[in-house]
Image (cartoon, rainbow, N blue to C red; front, side, top):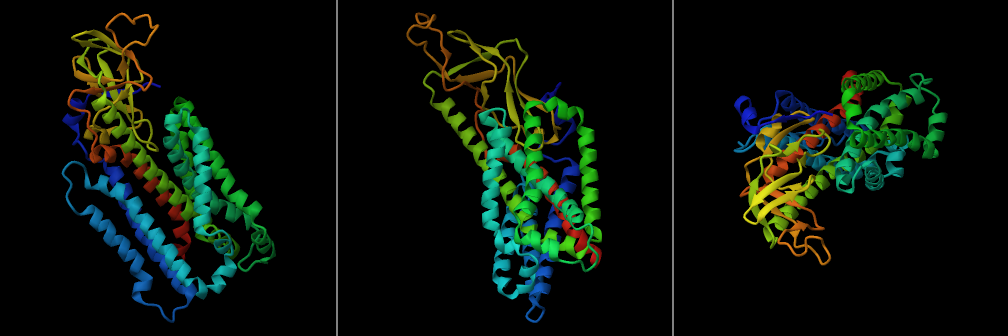
Length: 450
């Protein structure tokens, strides 16, 4: 696949560095609105099931107000280096995590008063949220390892599997519920569904297995045959739009059996969202730890070399946006560094230690921005004296060591929390878009009935 490579200076002439595209801001705003709406609708549903006798304004609206205040606190303060929308995109998954934890605590406190709801939705008690979340996390980790092309891409692949599984599960569940209860009338015979819920293993497999298998296959395709997916990107977008429309239509006027089956797996959607947020947190920790290790290796290497990049190739290092479902990755071409002791040859695939340019917020998937070019003053680590028996043992030349090579522009080896934010905001926006899509079928019934 041909990648479009940009010079940072040319991009900064047209775009404001650190600002997000308008459509991304709309996605973040929509996700925030959906989060508050879902909290309001969910609290109202719990209130109605628990009985309205002891209801208060705080019970019905407390969670939604808390989320709204948290969103305002994350968005309103000014930001010096990046967009406030970028900051909200990073913090909104954490706000939702706290909201889901509060909702689960409220559910456990109200459970003794919800005998009717527990009878209608026995899987909520049979498969508690913590157990489902833990089991799903283990399965997603294993799926990410299967899908990853290289070991270093494991967490990126795991994050992608978690996000795709959340999306596909959210679209698959309404369609499966509608198909499973397709013969129901307004008040159906509950016997078939009751039997399925008493022995839920086949039903659980039908709900969980297809989305997870499809998410793993798509992630493997992206990591191993990216060009094929890029070729049919429009078809993928159309399929997503059709799937979302079908899922929403399936929830607009559902039968009682469809509502009941869907309600038994709402907490599984919560678990998938929690796993996706956990994957994003793990990815953030991994990116930060990797940047710290690279900086430390560069700073502590006794054989660190400083020199100037030779004229060929003209573009040496770039940061590429491979996908919205993973962080950016660096690309380093084979190059030569001219030093006082001679020319040092750096192999392709060396680790690029550099700050993430703020202008990367304007890049699309498949595009990259140059951070190292011919003539730049650079620092290189990871080279060692030749071992005994090496052909160049008697020379003063250094050879690549076993721990890998790091290369950085001189004086620009740092990595700050801004760099981490610039690396992580795309997966966070993808998660927010997916969560909004997953929430729409669930909200369709409640909003349509009002």
